[in-house]
Image (tube, rainbow over all chains, first blue to last red; front, side, top):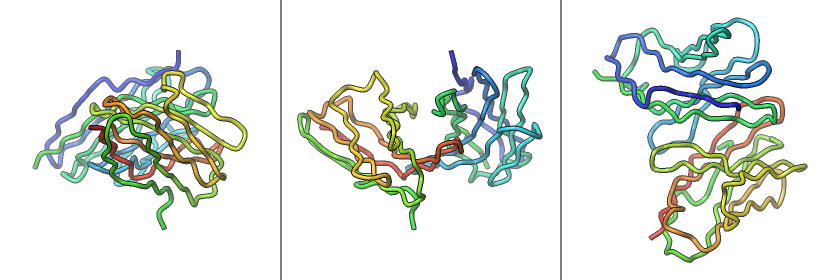
Length: 112
Length: 112
C-alpha cells in the first residue's frame, strides 16, 4: 500500500540550531515527493519537491530536503532555524493516480 | 490576485442545515480538490475533480457533494450538517502532471 509516515508529532529546536523533520514513504515506481508548510490559520504552501536528479533539493525559506532511495526517506532540513519557521509541516508523495498521499503532519516549534 | 480563493472564510451554522462553500482558481489548472482538516490537523482528501473525472474518497458521506460549474470553480455543498462536520475545509488546484497543488486559505466550519 502506498503511504507516507511522519514519525514525529512535534519537533522542538532552539533558534539558530539545525532542524530536521522526518518523512518516510512507500510507493510503487519512482517517487514524486513534496513538502508543504502550514502557518497558523493559513492554507498549505508548497516548499519543495523531488522528482528526479540531485538527491538534495533546495526550496523556499532556506529549507532543503534529502532524498534517500535506500531508506525511502525524504527528510526536511534547515541549517539554522528561525522562530518564524514554527509551523505545521506536511510531507506528501504522488501516487500512481497522480493524487497526493499526505503524512499526518509534524508541528515544528522553534524556541528563542 | 489570489490564486485559489475560498468563501466564506468562516461559517457558523446549526445542525441539520445545508450550506455551500465556494472555490475559485485563476491559475488555469485542470484539476481541483477539496480537503478536510480535522482538529488534530490531519489532512484528508475528499474529492478530486477535473473535466474528465470525479474521484470520490469512499469514506466521505454522500451528504457532501462537489459541484463544478466550470473548470475554474469547484463548490462544496453539504446537506444536513452534523457536529462532526466541524473542521477546516481546504480547496486546492493543480495541473495534471505537475504534482504539486496550490491551496486556498481554508473555510472554518463550525456546526452548533
